[in-house]
Image 1 (cartoon, helix red, strand yellow):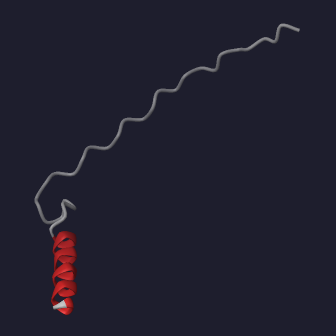
Image 2 (tube, helix red, strand yellow):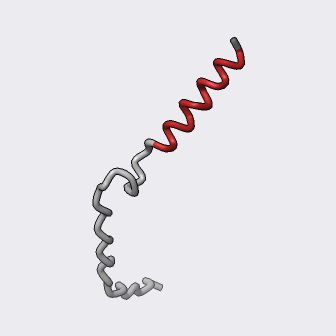
Length: 49
């Protein structure tokens, strides 16, 4: 009985890995690439001393 439970858990784990949405098997389109971050100018900081 214990071996059946271990086998069932192992089969469920293997099935979840195979059925996970990796995009390769589901036909989903890949996500678009991210846009580059804007380039900001540095703010000049003057010490008050």
